[in-house]
Image (cartoon, rainbow, N blue to C red):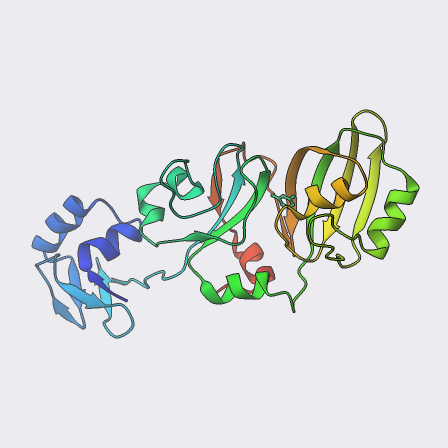
Length: 240
Ligand code: URA
C-alpha cells in the first residue's frame, strides 16, 4: 500500500499528523536508513522500511472489528438515506475502508464483523464453507418440539419454495412470546424470519450472537465496537 508517512504513522496510533510532522522535522523518522524530514512523502508499506524514534514500524494493512450492530442501521458501506454501520466507525478505522461481512437486517442486532480483508470475508460467506451463525430469537407464538424437528429437516420457505439446509432450534422458553436460539449455516435473505414465517410464527426480535468461532462480546452495547483480539483473529483465520 502506498501512502504518506504521516498517515501511516498516525494510523498506527503514533500521534496526530501534526505531531508526526513536527517529529519528522526533529529527525525522528527514517525511511530505508535515511532520515526523512518531510512527513508528507509517500512510501510503499511493502517495500520501504520505516523507523520512528529508532523503532521499525510495521504497517497494519488489515483491520478486524467486532460490532454489536444496533437496530435502525444498515449493514452496508454507504446509503443515501439510512445510517450505515460504517458511519458508526471512528475516522481512524474508516481510513482502512472496511466493509461488513455479510448482512444483518436493519432491525437485527448483534455480532457483525467489519473488515477490509476480502479473503476472510469470502471464506466466512462462501456457501461451501457452511459457517455456523447463531441467533438469539424472540418469536410471537409458542415454539414446539415439532418446530425443532422441522428446523432439523430443513424448512421450505414460502416465497420461493427454497428448502433450507438442516438448522438447529433450541427452545429456551416457549410461550407468548417464545425465546430460542437458532443456528443456520447459510445466509439467505431474511432467512431466520422466513423460516419462522413458514411455520406460521413471527420473529419479533433477532440478535446474532456468534459467527463461526467468533462470539459477540456482550460488554459491547448496541452501536459499540472493538478490534478483534489476537486469539479471535487466529481462530477466524485473519491476517496479523
Ligand atoms: N435472518 C434474518 O431473517 N435476518 C437477519 O438479519 C439475519 C438472519
